[in-house]
Image 1 (cartoon, rainbow, N blue to C red):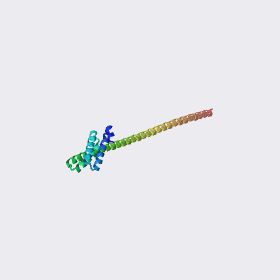
Image 2 (image 1 turned 90 degrees about the vertical axis):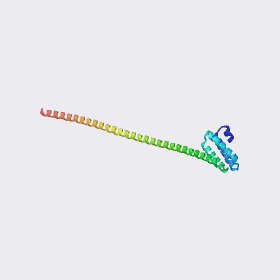
Image 3 (image 1 turned 45 degrees about the vertical axis):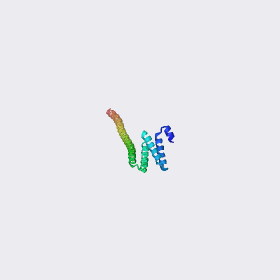
Image 4 (image 1 turned 135 degrees about the vertical axis):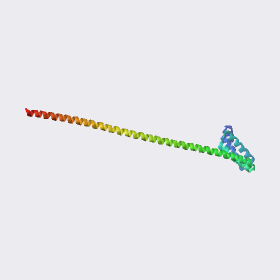
Length: 171
């Protein structure tokens, strides 16, 4: 896997393989080879800024150096490991906050859209009520006009009949 990662310049896999080889040599008790592989993993991960692999390799190298009694260098590598680990954690938090913010804004937008839709429905209902009432008033006025015209004609006919009757009686 390491040779394929080197051939295709896949730094993340290359750093990971070198780190695993360091772990393997440490379990076999070969601290020199283990240290060498951790340092190579750090170099590869640092070039491509593979933060997680760099952090892991620094922690592992720190452990080897501590086992070898090189406490000052072990502490420096451990501090670097912690700084990178904190950076990774901060990046994760920033991404999480951004995702939560986006979700919140989306919910706010959806709520605003829903409020606007409800408002538009209310306005449409009010418009329809006004239109319906207006139509009802117009129909009522037309019916009243027709009724009064009918009544007026009827009264004219009755008046004409009475006049006719009075004229007939006079004769």
